[in-house]
Length: 115
Image (cartoon, rainbow, N blue to C red; front, side, top):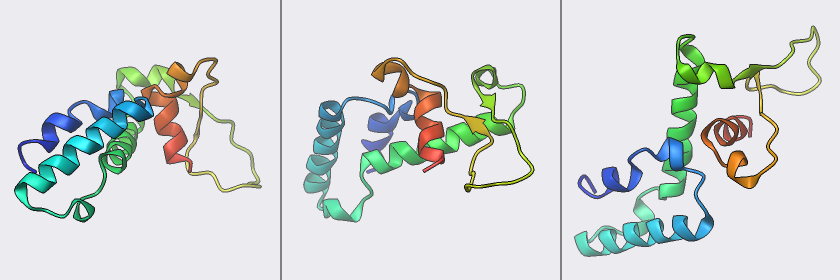
């Protein structure tokens, strides 16, 4: 767990929006490793869950740091005096024309955060 998982998760906030087939391959590697070391695979969180958590954690770090280079990609939403819906983030999810952009770090992480 200590040796394999860091390799599987390195940079996951950035590449976390990978296609389902590749995500399944990573999950398969984790299951094989669990079987080899004798840990029930259901005992560990899935790599997908961990990638989502890492993405949200990194996005929150970006949101707090006003000097972070990714701040230029975050657009604040307009605040009103009333709230019709619960808002968890003060940033708008950027419009995406392609699936590749939709699965990139900022749009994907904001979407996860607002779920």
